[in-house]
Length: 355
Image 1 (tube, rainbow, N blue to C red):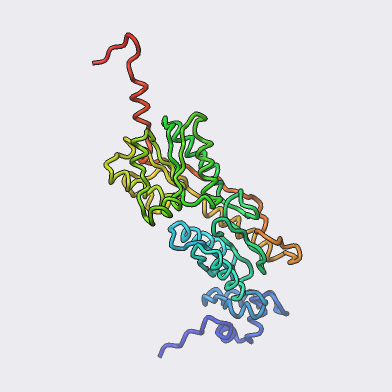
Image 2: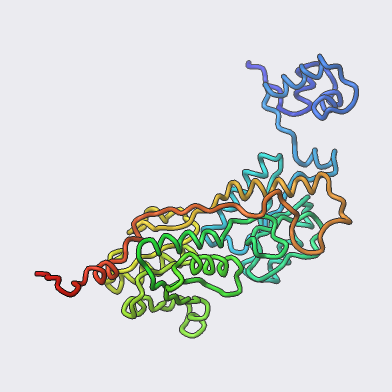
């Protein structure tokens, strides 16, 4: 009969080495009087057995949960699971687990989500706030990820510069009649993106902004955006503040028989997982989520480890080493030179003959 392998816990390690569980606990926690030689044997045995400290036991021993909270505004939006994944990895690298709560885009539910996480003993919290809200009166350190223009923001993508990159890209392709599409003017992120796009275009560019929330209030959820009409009015490019909005534009243009990018260019924001596989593949702006998460979690852990609660800001997040992270332009097949401008440029001048 095969001998049963010792369990990978304190008692199993103690039994394997012939010492007490208390001695094993002291060696692994660095507490108590354990000789260097015995401590090394205990740590080696723990590694060989695949021992992983119990979070619950560690919490009882240290009075700390080892858990961070994460509040997202809408986990149904494909952008936010990507952010959650980046935060979870950064937290794990720092030795923390993560509890996630969804505010479903509502202020009251955002407050409820924060309070639930506090009740569950999180040591700190990362909040991606609902648009137009500030985080205040939270009983633990908070890192806020929104936009650099948001008061109390900890770190975020440089949404304005991302917009500038899109604007310059379209201007370089000869587009001077551009429609910008975003959901809600209350969003600092969307306003920064739209403002950056406008700043990146030429000073003489003709621009118009379509706010989807306003259109849907008048015509119902999922209504047509009217982008085909804009093409007929002479607009040649559509710059969306989200890949989701860009996909909606692409679909509507294609339904109307308008070729992208031959007759109209379309750009997005966020480089969502499907942006490279739609037809045509989407020109967009990519966030460095891993870097944003690393900066946010580092600032949060630093506050947890050394903060004086009396110095905690009344509103907003902890202060990070940097406040914004550069975004990257990803050029794909949905944007191309303005054919209408090329045609106009080729119009014959006096004395010129065409056949």
